[in-house]
Image 1 (tube, one colour):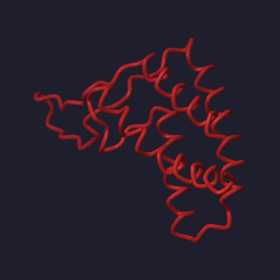
Image 2 (cartoon, helix red, strand yellow):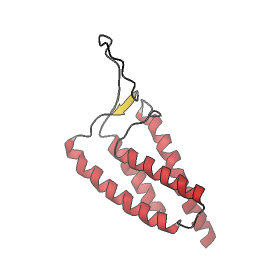
Image 3 (cartoon, helix red, strand yellow):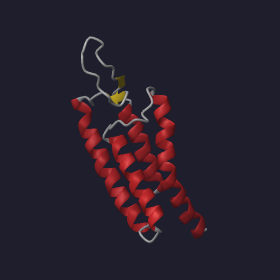
Image 4 (spheres, one colour):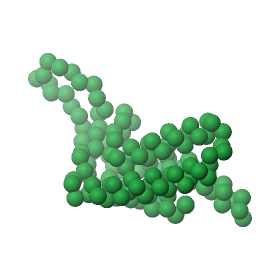
Length: 130
């Protein structure tokens, strides 16, 4: 499962490299002021959407197996797993939030930090088996 998680992370980074992050700015000539996330992913080009769909399927399958293996954890751990799952799905679906950095290289450590929860739980199982 650890190798497949690593593969998912690499594929997310590959997907990100196929688009860009743009900055939302209000039109200074408009009488309206819009409050929105400052940085957004541009739409993924059509030719890469099949890759995105395959990655979503791969990740959802991985998470289903992972979640079943960890279903007996306490509710706070399960809540954290659910939150992290939603964040990873958001990363694959190119959803933006208030914490989205402008530069791709600053998004990479954020993704790794989110995935670390999964890695840490998987490494505990590996250590127990040894």
